[in-house]
Amino acid sequence: MTLRGLEPAELPADAIEVGRVTDAWGIKGWFKVLPYSADPEALFSSKRWFLLPTEKGVKTFDGCAKLLIKEAKEHSDSVVATAHEVDDRNDAEALRGARIFVPRSSFPTAGKDEYYWVDLIGLEVVNRQHEILGTVRELLSTGPQTVLVISCVQDGEALERMIPFVAAYIDDVDLAARCIRVDWLADY
Image 1 (cartoon, rainbow, N blue to C red):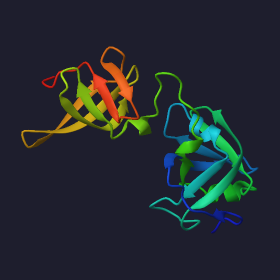
Image 2 (image 1 turned 60 degrees about the vertical axis):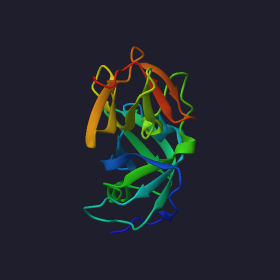
Image 3 (image 1 turned 135 degrees about the vertical axis):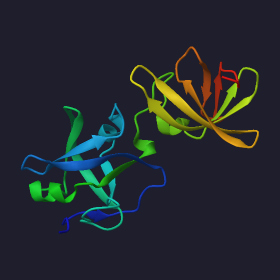
Image 4 (image 1 turned 180 degrees about the vertical axis):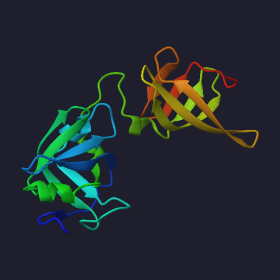
């Protein structure tokens, strides 16, 4: 089964994976999306979503395809959306499993002292003693706070550090310099 009207596209260079299509929703072409963020604003801010087929399962299209979104809104613990190219439930079901990407340039502007996780990954972490603690590999949401997971090599051994991403420990985030300054000792 292939989805008619799905426009082939080239994935933008600044594309970020923000969710995936989980299922059809209703009979009029709406589909459910599992966002990869607790705050799915990136899905709402872009009217162009780029899809890649799932690595496993049924492939209903090849390569990258572009969807022109008519509407996207929150519904329970997910997002529901409809697109110009998706006319009915069958079309929506054909999208099941598709990975959703949006251009980073279409993300809403972050507020003061707010950061997108994708912008923090790869930043160098330096403490007040000017010691390099490592590089941000990922972030974890623990419920009450977010934690930076930092990779480093010490005495030839690969190590992992975890630092809560809260004002008590984070002195400064300098995206331009690709550096996070922290109040954290190397032997913690």
